[in-house]
View 1 (cartoon, rainbow, N blue to C red):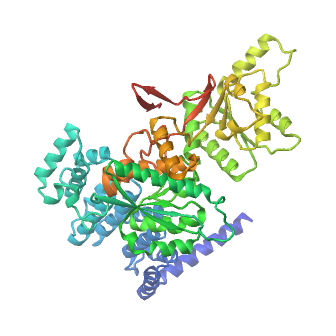
View 2: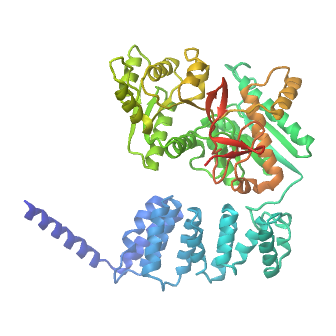
View 3: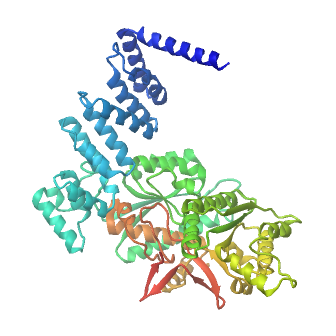
Length: 592
């Protein structure tokens, strides 16, 4: 049988070899033109496949090198960037003498810059001498270099001090720096590359550098929210949270205005309709918008995110924690930590700080519960934990028993027949484990707490903020047991809070809801970033260390598109206390 199989393989090999050898130059010419037509028509995936056979070496094939390049280009445009780079690597390694090899270096550099591999990209761009490609490579640097941190730019400039574009980007980045070393670097650049456009960011036009835009006297912020004004089926009560959000934003605008920070609000009703949003985006006013706040619902996000990406305008979603909203965007931001970030930070706390790598994860029956639980499982495994148990438990007559069975190893039921020595051994075995519950189901929550409370071992339990409102769980239990509360949208009580409440009541004649606080924080923080750093504020914001918000304990966008700080609380002496950052000399510092 195997003999027949090998005979068939050999026959196929000779058939393919003979077919290839039989090909004539005009055959390759025809294939190449057909593949190129697919590429020119925008059928990138088909073009990628069509160039594959033409990229093979053959004495009658004059298109091998061109097929390599165009296959890589088609793959790049189809989004298959890793494959595109592998083809370019083969082209550059095997055909370094190709007359158009600089095109290959340019394309590979573009991929490397998108993947944040600056050192490799700079090496490739250094190979380019052709004036036309050189100009394109300079534009490529202007596009991507501003996305890198100041420290990376300084390090790269030290290795390539003759690169003018790199020097200009760094000089503009260091404008206004109070660091003596950085001031000296900027002065040296100005001396080496005398250019009036380097004297101030405000002299650099959008056409020279679309990433480093000038500051303005007034910044335009577009609010595209589903007020649903006049829409049938929606009452004022249904959309009260949107009006509260808007009122909070208005108070923040007035606060900034009082500090001579001018923000112009452009307010639109999205009507929760993608087609309505597309019409809004065509308004003349949108040519000067610096920040968009909106995309509350998933169906609103696509047109807004596409527009923000194309126009390089930051888009802020102030309400959601859905990680999908920022998964594939370089312009969309979340005010709160995404579920992925929350999972990552909880894992950092339980695995690294508490040294409890063993986890028992319980989640409820909602999609959010499932997503959150499995994200946490992934984060623990990324950290190296191999002892992760996970189980979905729904509320029914067996809920308590199911929870008890699942936690039997780490939270065994107390028994009088167990000796003190056995109790101590059980308690000792629990020092490597913790329990995390992702559910807003009160019955399931009560069962979990009952199992933990009745256990003879003291196991840490991590829960979500909603549990604080469950009538079946008293605050005494939160304090007596080792229960940690995740509260990503917690607002501190401070003088700023009191002032906001006073202004809001004067304006609206009602107490502010959580949505009002969120609206205020959103515009207050992002508005201040706009005024401080200009239209390119997100580049600087994503370099800054964590800082206090108006109401939020810490806002940390360092190299991120959502707040990286996730407050974790314990109840101590009847009050909520954050346990993952400290207050020292009047300054809040995030614990590592």
